[in-house]
Length: 205
Image (cartoon, rainbow, N blue to C red):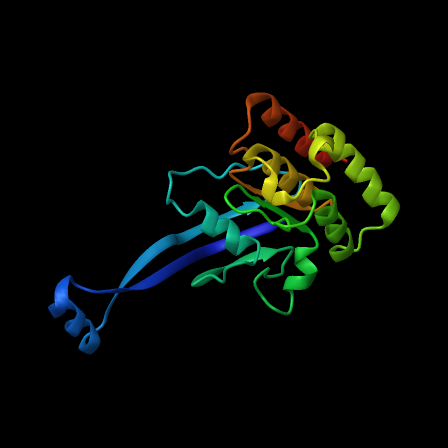
């Protein structure tokens, strides 16, 4: 179960007025602009739930996901994953084994390696037994149509191919929770259907 309690994340950046006068002024009386990326949100996700997090661009969706996966630390409030905080250094390693995440704008694969080598590294990092790894990989390779570019370097893949590869990488450890941030960017309609089919099928297994 995931609990989000009064979660907030504020970012500050220096503010400087235009011109030479503004430069001198900022030296002696520096100002900062506070941006409220996430401001006091609370919700709960129970085991087995499929939840959509909807909002306009800049609404704080990605920032919320980054706090829920431990990438960012909240300014205030908390995220609890089975009672543990994913951004707590003492608890982070244990929790991350149960979390899969796909960011549409940023790959988590190794850029210069063939895709298969990236998957082998996932196997080692998550300590997936070889037989189980091969079974999952065969299923994902067939369902997401990865075979034609499995030995290609990640940096040579098209956006659609990379998104399919990122989804496969996130699913290989068989996580309890899968976070998807713009996972269908660059995908055509048929591949989007395959993505959802994979996610639903694995979620029920």
